[in-house]
View 1 (cartoon, helix red, strand yellow):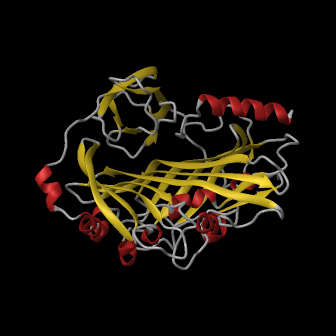
View 2 (cartoon, rainbow, N blue to C red; view 1 turned 60 degrees about the horizontal axis):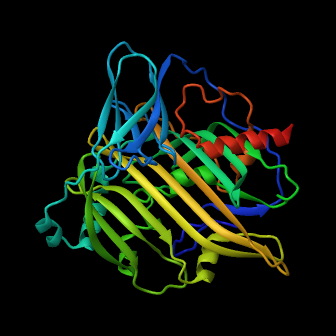
View 3 (tube, one colour; view 1 turned 90 degrees about the vertical axis):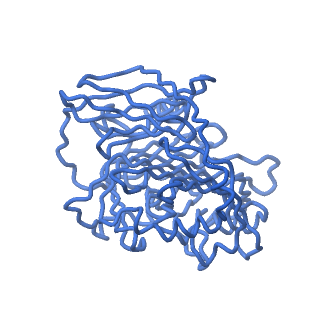
Length: 424
């Protein structure tokens, strides 16, 4: 199977194969000495009124490029350099007032942070006066101005999981380096390299099929829809969609236009539908939520299916994407990417099908723009490679050291423990 970038030339970007379980070996770049002098701030983020746990909330250190997000249960842990001076950890989320937590050089744990919904809206007259498609085109014209004009090296945490029903059958994670050219350039020279990673694979006999995500960490390149507009924001293809202005929201205490889009033409391949968020003042894209259209299951299958065993029937259910950006030093940077694929598989002559979910996500945890050098092609992660084949099994409890990650959910931690027991 394959997730593919739905371009007009149908170029494959990321592939998922249904195969037998494989055992991989570590193959990462040389480990460097990493300082361990850091402090940790951890807790949970909730809605102040409903007390609902808030997922994918941005957590960052003010005045730096250090950041992470909350997991699906609202939990977070962020590591920052130890300093006797007061540091501020900022908490921000779509539709909520941002807040700050002072850190005075000591660890803070088990925090419960309540965010207040932001009810401020944009000027209705301004909203009515702007054509939504024209706003998208204006934001595209401002990409060179609003986004980084430097070569940059991003540090990220990447995780991919495969579930059979509700049960995890593979878990792979890695710290990655992401080399990005200026946003005025295309993505041809952007590359990803694995710094360190780990994986667990199910050993159950019933899991004779495994879904391998090929090129997974390269999501950091190809799902950057601003840097790679051919995926979604190609000017020549905007006419394929109809755009509508939705109710405005606030992100990081900044008003945002919200523009929904959906296909208005029928093509020989599947199109997308979703929402774009555009900063009112800077006209910078800050968020993109979109799904592959399932109106024609055959077209959707062509977009995501690369290879499968003979006799296996594949039924796509949902392919969704989320891309977030954040502002730092008057520029907008990639912040978070998530991709989720849900599908059903069954063998001919069998009555029941099996549900599968493949989820991959990447959060940028640091950004460097000085003395940046390109990642050589020969050591970069290729679209034909699978992360689970390139990293070793879970072992060291303190594997990540002072690198920031996305905290595992309770169910994921439980799955890790179960998969570890299978290997004994």
